[in-house]
Image (cartoon, rainbow, N blue to C red; front, side, top):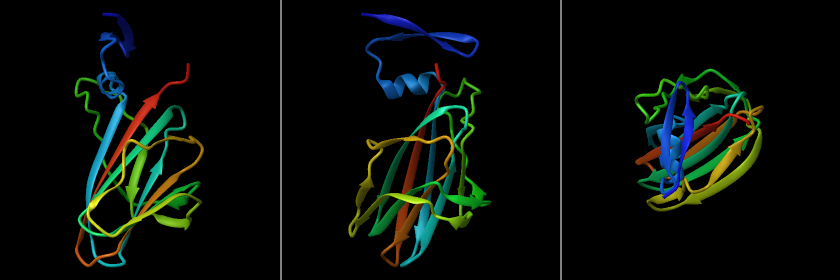
Amino acid sequence: MTSFVVANGNDETIISARSTMPGLIALMGRQFILRDILQMSNGQIQNILIIPNANRKTFLGVTLETSAGIDLELYEGTQATGGAVLEQLNPNRENILTSGIAVTTDPAITDDGDLLVLTSTLDKKDIFSGDTTFIMDRTKNYLIRVTSQDNVNNVEIRLAFNIYDEL
C-alpha cells in the first residue's frame, strides 16, 4: 500500500492511498460543514448569502432535503449585506483552521446576480445533491434562495466547503 505525507500546519499526517478524498479533506482540517433547518410556509422565501474566502480555492457542495415542495435557485455575483451569521464546523476537532467563508441568512439584497441553477420539486426528496460541486469564484458572492410551495415545510440544508491553497 502506498502512503504519503501531507503538511497540516505544524503537523505532518501520513495518509494511506486507500483514503477517500472527503476523508482526506476532513483529516487535513480543510472541510467545513454547515447544517440548518428552515421551517417554512407556503410562498415563504429564505435567502442564504455565501461570501467566499478571497485567498483560497473553495469547492461548494449543497444538499437540500424537504418535507414538501420547494424551488431552489443558486445565484452568482450577488450584491448583499448583513444577515444573521450561520456557524460552520470543522470536523477535524484538533485543527484550528477556519474557512474564512461568511454565510448569513436573510441578508439585504440589492442585486440577485446571475442565475446558475433553478430546480423544483413537488414532493419530499433530496432535490439538490452534494454530489454536484461548484468551484466558487473568489471574487463573487453567492445566493441560495429557497421558496416553499406548501403550508408546512421543513427544509434541511447542508453545505460543505472544501478549501485549498493555491500551489
